[in-house]
Image (spheres, one colour):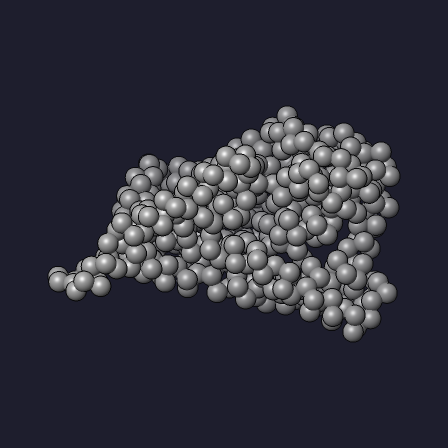
Length: 448
């Protein structure tokens, strides 16, 4: 038995037995945050409840954005042309090891472009590879294949959509008076970050295949998922005038082109600035352009809508946790403790650890930076540390603990058709290994 099979087995067993469902997880975190706020800060029970309630709607816009991304990407993936491309990608692996490596690598590269691309494309590629491999003489373990896709998410903050790095690189940001504008050449485009990103990508591409179970333990993709993946387009033999109008492809092509033109104008006026709105419209426009008719696209969206229920339910409660941590001063307490045990050479390392901890309670890169960023920047200034070090420290911590935080598994599992407990045992191993990589990188950066 291979060493990484041995390492992964206890984590798989632990997750299957003791890890709660993602919704139960957020309830437990809410209780912990509430008790911590009233015991570690001056907040009263009443003020903490108010902070929680006021925080519930803070991520409503974000919830809508990720919902549109999910249903748009799901619909796009089920258009005939994309299905054809995915089948060809799924045919590439000649062995099970190649299948796991291909999925991990694809998800990682996509995550460097945009975190949302990494999650959605990773899930779609994993499902496609599993379907095509089910027709081959070798078996692939579908849970590990999906875990490989999620592992790509562990490097997203090192790429183009890094929330904290883009925040401090934007003129007029809230901390500009303290640190000025920190260019991306000092953060995501620094030689250290690029090296760590490539090492992280290489690590997941190599390690995921090494965790494959013995053949008797392999769980292949459910045949029902293969049936669900096959697009069905039913047209009546004869249609009246209204039905012909509804099924005329020119209508969805017009709408899709309109969105594409808007995106082009936006890039021309503002430069290539990839945000969640643009990602949302990109998936929708491509889906519209590739669907056979407006009615076909509506049917694809209706099918995809069933994948977003958990996200819509859980986001407000994570937002409530964010409200407690930001309003009661609990975040200040946590960060002050981290600062008290730090030196200029180790502040970046402890920013990394604290970023990983806080991400468990605020699983949103932008939301986490908004709460934790100002405190860490002040710590860097007081200890004489280059602010770019703590920016990347918090970013690395955020992406690192995603591997054991079930929240971001929701979109990928909704597409893959699995449960969180089936993949997190494998990503626990990725969590351990990337923790060593990123922690060492932060210690190497020192005070900058």
